[in-house]
Image 1 (cartoon, rainbow, N blue to C red):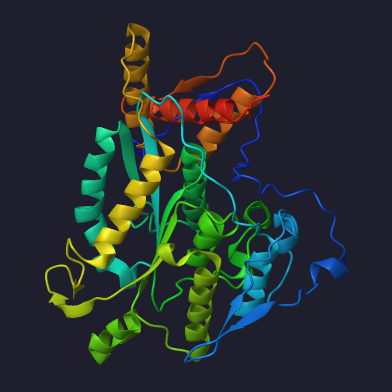
Image 2 (cartoon, helix red, strand yellow):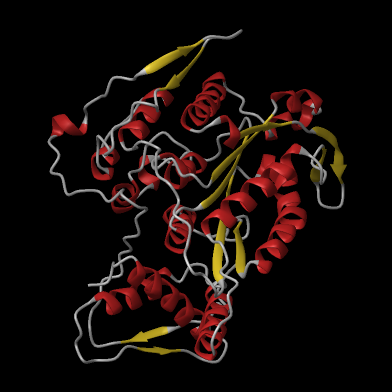
Length: 413
């Protein structure tokens, strides 16, 4: 994933346009609220319910959520939760009931882009991600093409530069989910969870404007914020969660266990609460536990080999079956014959989809173009200047795709 080239592009325009991005998932736009010092520090009572079983557990009550969030994204970004339960209470306060239905597209004849976002920590899920990239997604992509659907898997192992700042890393991760909202209304979202929570940004790592834009819950990891933004707050009906069976840890040699599990009891408890919240928020059919076992070390790649992820495994089949069902429901194909104008339009759409899918990053120039498109007409054109191979076509295609989606959602004045 990435633009066709890293060469510089330049926007030539007489207007000084703001470049702040303001992408929002449906119904989560924060209202402008003036917070007093008291409200900034307020604590909300945590509502929990005891679940019977061999081990007593607690989970946030997701079944009694109001139709509108109790707190805006701006308000919740000012809170300072002190433990995982308070973090998830903040999530609950910015969430709504999960009764949203996905309305199938009507009379769809042309090509459509499907973006599937994969969320997990990286180091401990290398084997699973390799199976997804090399086995599951190729099969799903072929299936999608028969329905005139262009599948793009959003695997950010290759999308975040090593030299990226904390702000750039957070923007890339959550911004990619924004693109999933733009293209598909409800992101096709896959989360893999086990025993590691991943990087937890400090307050200094998250700029104020970014915290307010996404309703950042301080104390959560970047993977947890992906889950919150991409699935939790709206109870995304296109989200699937795969939880690796804890027995996997017992098959690992002691010398590599630290790469697959948190070392502190506090961090372990944090992951257990996350799993309880996932199970409390989503139906059992979308929270799948799977088994796998350690199978040695791949010396050439210096990675852990895992068995139990074969083609007929619960892991592989759960992903294929779920997303085939959700995608075919949301984007059924109208196979009726097309006239010549529709054939030409389909060709243009196919070109747009193929070029726009190669853009990752370039936020500043994309934001400038969208600001120009959405601003009152000035009579002055905007010109994109760049050398051959700089990615002009990809940038224009991506901008056109974004503009079409905004027009369809009546987001352009």
